[in-house]
Amino acid sequence: MDCRVAFVRRFLGVTLVSAMALVLSPVHALEQPGGQSRALERFSARLQTVLNSGSPTAFETVVSSELLPVLAQRLERFRQDFPEVMWQVEPAESTPDGRPTLNLRVRGATESEGLTYSLDATEQIAIRLEAGQLVEQELLAQQSLLRSGKRPLSVNLAIPDVVLTGSRYDIDLVVEEPLGKALVAGGLIDLTDAQLTAQFRPNLPLAPLGGGGLFKSVQAPQQPGSQTWAVMLVHPDGVVTATKRVRVVSSN
Image 1 (cartoon, rainbow, N blue to C red):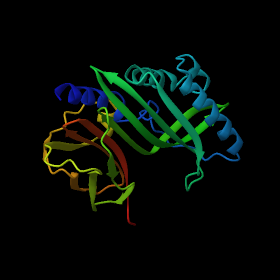
Image 2: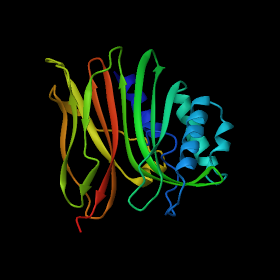
Image 3: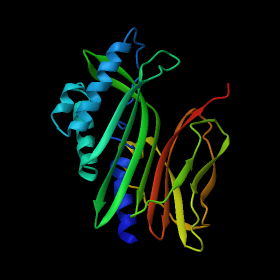
Image 4: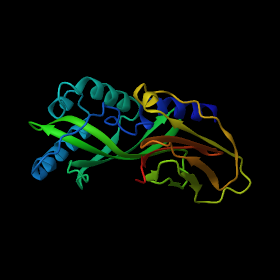
């Protein structure tokens, strides 16, 4: 069990906290584009092809030179942990202020020290394109699930997408199949933007849990922004780790 937890904690610092290689780029104020639906469709198709190609140089065709060093490095680190994954990139609804967005999903599996780990992660980003290349982006939503074991445990991650400033809300990682009297441990940690940018490798404190999963009540900050949570559940057959970014908005 120690090697499973060690892998997951190492992986948290490299990719799972951000879910995918594109998440941790700098966030800038984006200008409102106009009439770019076809350009967005073409770009999403190109980006999906590049991400699935596995070529380190192909990334240069879809990302500006300013963003390329950081994004290429993080994509390469992601591929070191998950060399065989499948990416899906699709245009999504524009933001209320008119910015185009993309939905990204990555799924795959890897092996470490004889154990198999499966990943399913999604994110939504607002973007700005120039000459068919990504020049700016903002992370809007993110969620990931990493599970180990020959038969990954079926779980449901119940965390809201948006909460009000100062409100209390629940973080639940629900086990959807009975574990009987099996010993289960778990924990969660709130990761700051600075820790995410530094690819911080968290040491999640674990405590005994009931067989139904992890159930916590937390409080949103008093200022609008976001919170990113990392959750871990250790059970007899493996480890489940999840991350979720929660938007915090003002009630005014």
